[in-house]
Length: 214
Image (cartoon, rainbow, N blue to C red; front, side, top):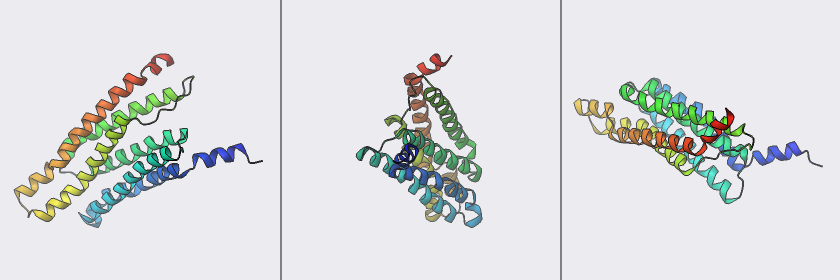
């Protein structure tokens, strides 16, 4: 008779969960190339990091779609999927803050809002999981929109300077675009908006568990 623990492990390690783990494994490589972009080539490092980040982001869309289509949704996946998103986005944004001095003065606030939201939501998730009914909260639609906007934001930060350096010669126009890249600015605003919005909705929905735990 097969061991029940083995069966549970196999169930947790289905294809969607493997894709999520693969996304987690890509995070340090993405961060590494962002941090080293000035060492291996100003544009080369950014392009490699953007490709790795894009591949990791695609797995985020695939694992959920496969899990829903083939009924492979597990509590392990519900917990790990948003956690992988957090590591990918926060890790990349923190590396950008370290490497991209031209936007650091204002991009700092984008990163602060994202980190604050994730710490707050993760803390609430732990309270919910430890509650008497042992509820596991899956990512909702607003959370997915928030993550998508954050992904667009990171990709715009990495790719926009590469494009502008190809199009514009050295000068005031290039300097301005590197300090205030339009797509990055717009996506940063949307990132703050949806990040705070999802935080408010999350606490309005699950804040009752905080009261129960007191």
